Length: 261
Image (cartoon, rainbow, N blue to C red; front, side, top):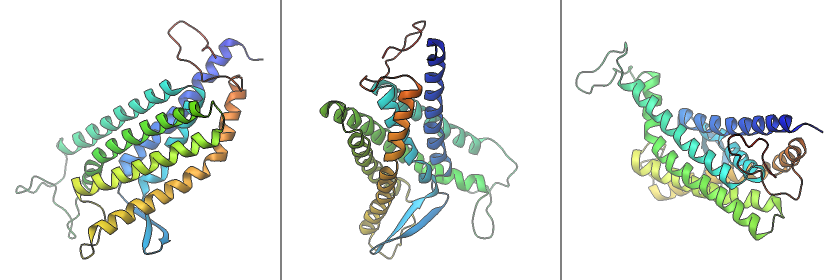
């Protein structure tokens, strides 16, 4: 049986790993963003198109669900707010990188770097344009979806009296992913107009197609993370010495030592 000090170290390390995966995935989403669209197939007339930044996003819901189950709603909500701060920090650095003087030739009429023959600006400025155009949408969608995920997870946990782990994991994630996908597609289009839409076709069906196919990808990822979620929760309960019938670890005040169960 590990000592109380060893349990403290294990619990802190596990929380740091999950938090790091969560925040790293959020950073990838904002930095890579709309830099590339990936075609994963077709649903009827709609292509399944996701951005490269979205590939890491489903892991964020797995992390918050595991933290919610092991550490509780308060710690999961704190992590969501830290993620918002990280989003703002990324936005600040990307903005600052564009306004500080560099070695690019500047067009005096526009104040922007001179592009190549195809009209494309240097790589950083292309990424900056996409990042600045979508980060605000991402931040609103992120905060709304993650808070929805945490609240629903614990609402279903209370409703089912701690049973049916699969229900609160899948139910909270699937609803929050729909909120996230709808929010980010609509805000991105109406605020920055950077989605690859066909101007000759009606806009609304294309936006619905983006929401439908993006949500389908996230829905399948939510189903796929059920077994990893069960395994991870079971493993952490054993590794961190948390009784199966206990509630989540409570918040620890400085100097209190090992969290109470």
